[in-house]
Length: 575
Ligand code: 1PR
Image (cartoon, rainbow, N blue to C red; front, top):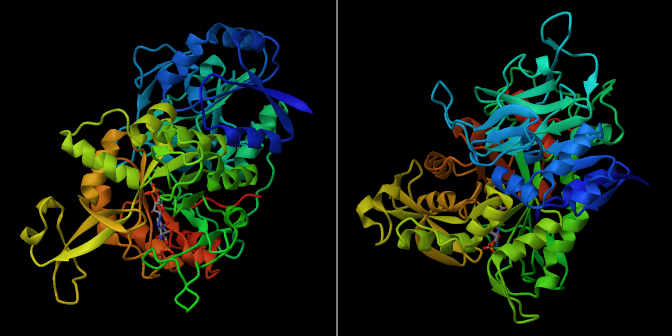
């Protein structure tokens, strides 16, 4: 079997990269010391998390001279995400740390506001292009290369990006030095999405998480095809017109649709996908059994082929202790990540725990590590985030460096930490009637009053699957977890869960205005129109659906068709 070498320099969530390489027909061999670099032909440098952490780890293990030698010898090199950033001179993310310096620029942080004052979420998470390919023609100026594909990139395709820092694109500058550049735009900032020269290639996006479009890029690198004839794409909706270039994007990103699978063991002991109403997952019949809507791995694969942009698994009974070696979601992730090449999030039970199998204390970071090694790209923290936020406020807006959010974010990057919130909507007659501990500023006037006509609500965070209500408001939670290092908010709403009545727009707008990190709307989707509504009425970054997909009422594709029809930019399925 053909081989490619991966640098093993830092703990990373790169199981999916290995799976993608194997899918392309290549075998991965690990490089575990700088000396082994000399024996490698093709090298991939996967970048994880923080620029400083990545470059310091490479420097500490003395890899930097070996990488330079490899590149100088003309052997193929592929840097992914921070692996692309490592090629530059430096980054504002870690001003004292020096990069490989093949490219002279310094990476910048995205500005959270565009020139017209509109907001941009940071990190930038989602699907964008890497299409307008520029290279230098000796007889003329920079041009756009349209009839050949650069490392399998195609103009119609979308690729999955997740980053806060970027290499700004200055037309002509790098092309004059022989680089071919594919660009992307986030709001009003243009940056380098992919770049290559001779034996060096790098992408800011994650090809291993970009579906078939990304696999084509990996394949092109592995097969050594810098330029090729582009292959025609499938269209998910031949019946409707594909989204036009003018379709409304979110600062350049497509509207992200996430399929969510709540997983637990049923009374027979099988792991099943279930779905509740207001978090009650038991049948309303006499049997009162756990609703069984299907098998997790099969359903994840189905949603992938329906063009879901991400798949989330939530282990909803994870507050019950089980031996760490037997964490039920590990095998589900291992299996799913072999054939689902979009980001996978896993939630439930990410906290410090005592392993009932061995009696040993296992940290949240260790639990997360197990999930990352099994194929997760992000972990979602629920109950533990509420505790961490309460402590943060008690300490006077300070973390202690030991919470799951802080430790996982420091090791894997902010983008790998989602906080899942389970708020309950509670009415009060007047804002001052809110119980002690509830900031009156967090009480909203609602357009949907209670049966007795009360017009004020606040959203209280719950833990343990909605079983316990705390006096921490959702605003207090999200601002705290953002400060602690969370990279994204998964915003459920217990009152809307399973209701098919649409998202809680007031809640979503309120949370969106409180944070800079992306927010995923969840709970209440009952038809494609609800997705249109949430994108139209809020600035939300992604929308998640569960029951309507599981019950077979709608496919993910139908949501995208409806969004495209209404003028929103969506990612099309590529087979
Ligand atoms: O607290 O860190 O162990 O995490 C537990 C995780 O499990 C949390 O993310 C929590 O939201 C989730 N969870 C716990 N109990 C339930 C339950 O349903 N009984 N599920 C539960 C949360 C909500 C969404 C659902 C949307 C969309 N489920 O995941 O998918 O509401 O549903 P819809 O589109 O059908 O309306 P920890």
